[in-house]
Length: 479
Image (cartoon, rainbow, N blue to C red; front, side, top):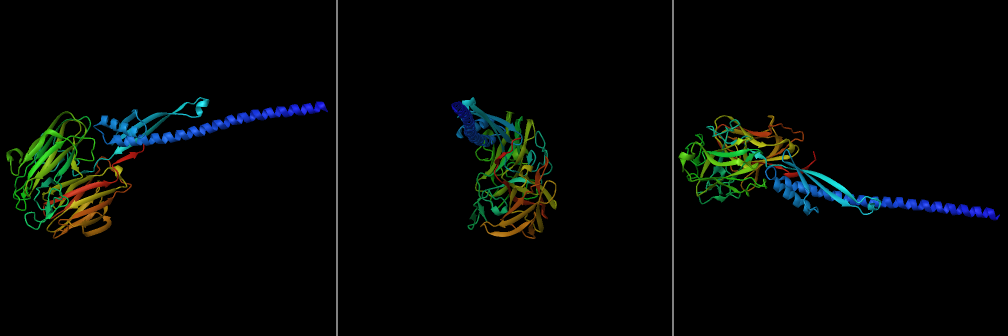
């Protein structure tokens, strides 16, 4: 009996020991899982923070492309530091199409996993941002406006643009077609004129886009000053208007900078300015190309800004053209920034004018077009927005007068708008066309939309604006 009891006691003691061993082993496993859970949560939190920092760094740096990589690095480092990752270490990879990839790496210490030998994690996150430039308007080439004679150096690379660049004097009636350089609408020389709320003394801005690897930029202006022609159809068609006697015209070239969305804050380039009183220096400027600027050496790539403005108590319209060339590298691209003021005086019933460059990346977005005082004629006249493949774009549109009163509208349909029925339909009015870009829209190297203008008379003066609705700086998938 005692022997049997001893056996039972030994068995119970043995089983208790096994349970203790099993319990201890289970506790180790549970602690390992708990440690893994805590540290994985910590890892996920830091990974999210690092991704946010990489996104911010990419967005901050991309607007400096292509000409200011040092500034791109500084801005990316500052953005990463502001998000909790100071000390540099931001790797930048410039890509095509104004895109910038950022690679950010950090180490994260563990809390509990270090007990079993894992002291830290190394995390790397990548982000890519793209900067979408302002929509180029009016020209796909190295010239903006007509070229009656070849400019010095590289010729204009495109065909006949069918228009002149134009700007009016301050005391010209806005209703003559210049929406921004004119201070008044109605007759500025009468006592009944009204202030133009859109008057912009700064004038108009043109982009001269220079590719990386270019050198020795030259900019020429054709017929830079105002010289009375007496007839809209003769030569450039400069005409004094509203008893004004012409206009004083100014041209100045500015350096590229790190705020390409804002053409107003660039620094002027020394020696690159014309100041031409009305009718003066005809032997230097009239009916000829004059060199505005010669920027020697290796060029900073990016957008050089040309500003054109008028001064003086004068009224008249000055027509001119712009040409840019480089001694090495790809031809520069000259275009209007945000808006253009143009004059067409070429004979012919139908004119084809370059409107805006709409790249494939804008598929599914909205193109917003504005036309001031368009298509005045003494018969039936039309303007039609065409896509690069020649098909008519679909749009809805409305018109409004100087007081903001809606004067006409149309629901979505073919973007062919009648502008005259024997008398001007939109005299002194804005026409706004909203074009929904198809999600299936594609274009190859030629992404230029154009305007087909049908006129009975050979001349028209108007102002155009174009923009893509959407954020110009965005994150895109990593390549």
